Image 1 (cartoon, rainbow, N blue to C red):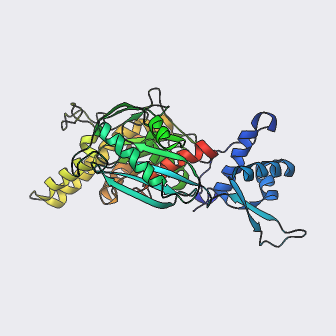
Image 2 (cartoon, one colour):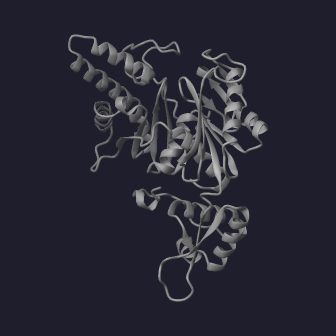
Image 3 (spheres, rainbow, N blue to C red):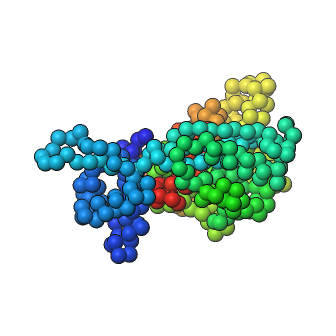
Length: 392
């Protein structure tokens, strides 16, 4: 995996604190540095962190006892004196479960290593779990049962100790892992974190799927410390990183832009009952319907270009105030590349720049997420890495 230093983005990791009031922080700092920069000697860690060699040796010994850090053997670098012993985060000896509940027709879960690589994965159609007939739409408690079964089956595929479970789900999720509302799953006030911890005995974190996705982009996708990721699927949502930290909001709903009204024209009727919501322009079903209508018209090429231009403009109209107020550097689009790339991406970039204060160089860039298919799974794993190891 590409290291943080190689990405060209500044990661605000902060300085080490005094052992008397920050040992846990220093342990986290060692893990974070090794995870980002790879194996190094205790002496190199000492220089990198600005801590004494004695302190670093003590921290490394503690982490080795916990199974978080391992010795890899002698360094190949030729230096005077005794060869240095390399240490690294225990990449092969610890694993994580990531769960993605954002799919329109299927639930996914995977076992991942500490670098975000998927080792084993399971995908189950909604309605394929215990107690639900095949092909039948599952909602409410039936989906809860499917999720519990899916996670248990995935945990059985792990080949190393599991640090925990991360879940990315549609809807609004409270800080304590309760899914307050997820209409597409038929959920209201579902204590998903508590249910999974009782069912598996593993520490569990639950987050909105777009929030999980922005974690993945920030940690594994080269994202910067001030970005917004817009996840486009059957709905539209976003996750926001400000100053290297995810914004949650007063009601755990930061980034819920799908039902922001864009424009003064009435627009199409949304599933929420209003007209002109962003989702009526930018969701995958809305885009596909509009493109199908354009292809059936008299001037399909021109009509298709209009669809992409209007959708990109509407998204940029919703994003411009957020980008401007928070001074964000990147807008990342995660979804089907054949829909979001090319003319739509260009329309977002051009409209954003037209609506923001002119600067040279441009104040914001717009790009596609590198791994949209697995981005929620990997982001869910990042949540566990941060919670259990302080790695992000």
